[in-house]
Amino acid sequence: MTDMLTPDYTRNMRILGHSDQGGRADGIQIMVSGGYAYVGHVFNNGFSVIDVRDPRSPRFLRHIPQPEGTWSQHLQTHGDLLIVNNMCDMLRVETSGAFDPGDYYKGSVADKVEIGGAGRKEPFLLPFTRAIVPTVDLAAGRIIADPPDGLD
Image 1: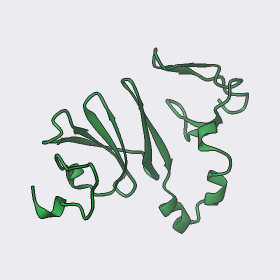
Image 2: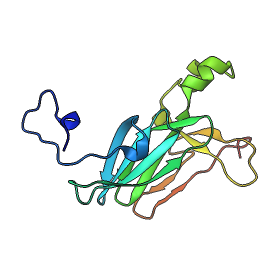
Image 3: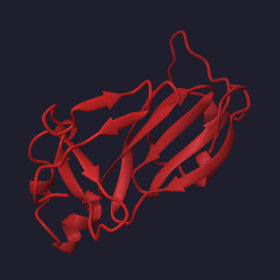
Image 4: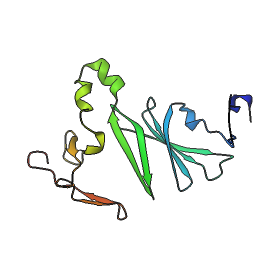
């Protein structure tokens, strides 16, 4: 281990290993599940997967890019399910003038889900309520949404 990894101050902690996250130093959130660390990035467009089953020797596996114009700073795991929140890249929007960034964040992000897929030109945000999303079955890995008329 190098001096670079010696913290200025620790209490009841010690460094066991180090990963350079595939050369991406902007890891903002880490979720660990099943021996793998999922690291969200703000500036490197996506998230990384690191094998941490041997914490003394973590191994970078791959970087998964996000759609253009988004960042994935929020990740969540539940069992073998990984949820990646592809949020609008506000650093690009604020300088492009494409739309008002304040409108994007009105209300709670937890109350919306982005819908996209085959035949769609643009994804849209759908309110995440029981009336519109009546079935959330994490054990089966499925969510059923019933968008109101005009959105689907």
